[in-house]
Every structure is written in structure tokens, then in C-alpha cells.
Image (cartoon, rainbow, N blue to C red):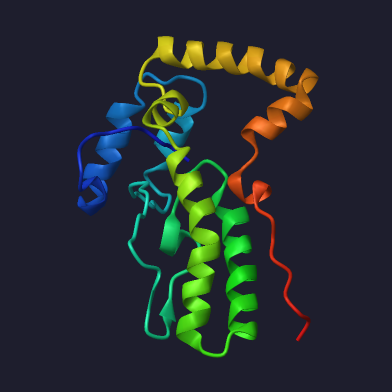
Length: 179
């Protein structure tokens, strides 16, 4: 996977040749495995898209409901899957316990939205840029920071884990009766 930060919108709508050209220019001096990956673009299938964050006022309308990334995409930082599982659990539980669908959908959103919103709010532009350095110096700085952070996080495991675990892990799952 090749990922980069760009302020230009609509790159995913360009034709394949233009997308490959953008990737070649962006990663021309990246080193390591980049030349091999760029060479493979000639024959490989290409999926080129923007990473975004979904923020909606409502997750349901009538009997239709959104769940997971369709309702609250947080970005590529690992909270999406766990939060989607929480959402599925709550949605199923509320559909099984409420008298009608609109009430169940409203309760689902009332219960899950605060955690989804926290997860979205924790994605900072600085973190996105830090994970996608734009220069050799940026890559070296990223590696140095991660090189120090990894051993320290192991030694401080419990504390770091409590500070960095995804919002879904901090979510107290409601209990629902077995069907």
C-alpha cells in the first residue's frame, strides 16, 4: 500500500495512467522497496482512493440504518473494526429489545454516538501527517520516534495501553437478553 497526504481533491477520479504518474512522482525518491512497488504498477490492479472521515447528523432514516464506517468512519488508525463490532452488538440488541424499529435505531445511535464521536475527534491532522512523511528527513524522524516509542511502550505497557487503546475498548457493552 502506498499512502500520501495531499490537499488536492479528486485524484481518485483521474484515469489510471495519471494516478500511476502521481504515485511515481510522489514516491520516486522514497527508497527501500518503493522502486519495486512502482515497477509493479505496470501490470498490477490499482485501487486509488482518498481516506476520509464521515460525520453525519443522523445514522438512520425510517427503517434504514448505517453502521460502522458508513456511519462514523474514523480513518485508518485501527478503531474502525472494534467500533463497528460494538455498533453491531448494540444495534442487534436494541432491535431485539425495543417495541419498534425507529425507537431501536434512536437508542442505538444514542448509545454508540458518543464513542464514535470520541474516536473521530482523536484523529488529529498532525497524526495523519506524521504517519505519512513527505521527505527523507521526515521518514528518518518518524523512524527515530517510533524506535524510541516502541521499547518505552513495552516497559510502560499498562499505562500506554490505557492512554492509547481504541475508544471501542473503553466502551461498556450493554447486556441484552439471549434470543
